[in-house]
Image (cartoon, one colour):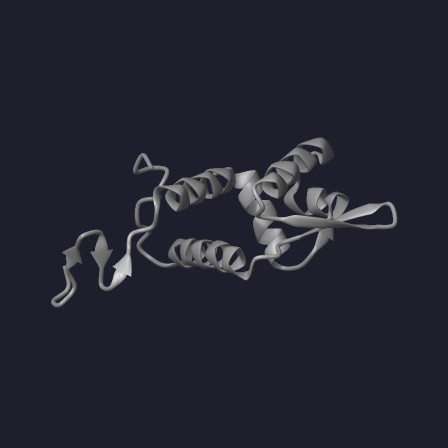
Length: 126
């Protein structure tokens, strides 16, 4: 542990531990993002809004499967949608979620291009 940073009563460096409810909500969100298909959709939507047809083309998924993934992300509050004529347009309305997705994928992409290649998370049993 770094000098001067201690744990006192659930407080680390002056920051209170999150509540059980917050941890449960975060775990559920990360659980949804544990799917490579949903993570790809979040990445695509972090670049800008899109309808389901364009998202399916971009991520290489079948339209019904992409629709189901979007429905789950929407129920969890990670994405939103609005109607434009006959199209349903999806977008990420939370800049913090966009940041989390971009940082994680950016870090892993940077690791992939660096040498030597460190062990992958899935190889480590994570």
